[in-house]
Amino acid sequence: GQQVMQIPQYQHVQEGEDFTTYCNSSTTLSNIQWYKQRPGGHPVFLIQLVKSGEVKKQKRLTFQFGEAKKNSSLHITATQTTDVGTYFCAAPGGGADGLTFGKGTHLIIQP
Amino acid sequence: GAVVSQHPSRVICKSGTSVKIECRSLDFQATTMFWYRQFPKQSLMLMATSNEGSKATYEQGVEKDKFLINHASLTLSTLTVTSAHPEDSSFYICSARTPVGSREQYFGPGTRLTVT
Image (cartoon, rainbow over all chains, first blue to last red):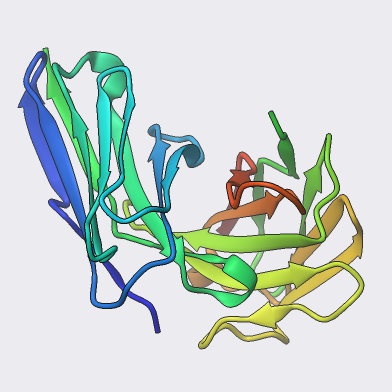
């Protein structure tokens, strides 16, 4: 079935440094979504990318969808302690648009 | 925005018993809901798609007789873990998608199941 590879699994950064997580699929994706899960919480939708080469920004977060619609990235500029959590990419892959999630990148910020 | 609730938030049960988890869409109708399972420090794995008024669709490797899903109304889906065993201990999360518009899924807060 559909697989979405996500790296890195863990990322330690100093507060104020940038952070990037990458997702890769062997097949062309109709869309890709990004979620954030705080420790002990549930996934919260951040954004959906649909178009080839699409770039979207939300304040310090920049999301990109590759030209071939097989890869995506999330970049956070000047991380803050509130950015701590696990960031997941997800793509349609289960029945009736159930999502296949990447393994997630755990962002750990050292003050 | 759309709100999805789950009940209970935590449950501890003895091995061999059954546990029912409810997932409700509070301010919209959801013809389709999804059930995921998440083990500690791991990703979410789709278990099944719950369809209002029809049988659920299970992902490969998920036992339909063990994880009973009932989508009795447009706002309620239930997951019953039957004859629970310690290896069923996990975080169970449901999500619902609004019937029109974006494909955004709204996730419930999750239910942490511990089987002793």
